Length: 87
Image (tube, rainbow, N blue to C red; front, side, top):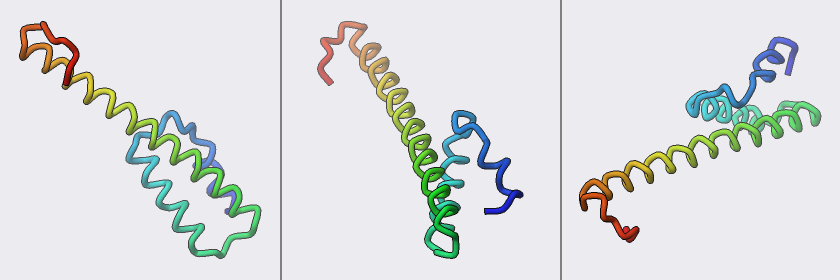
């Protein structure tokens, strides 16, 4: 990794959309698979990849929670708000 890639690495993971994190993770994996990095570069890439994977997972967990909430809202509306909690 050269100094040209440093600002991109400093980007806060919390600011990345799912798609941005996923695409960056793909680039990191491709770089690691090439095997042309130094050990230090490979370790830095691995750490970045782990953080990006965690960010993607957080997005997916949040999306699932939103879908579950929407389904629960639809279930409650379908039975007139008298849902007994059984799905």
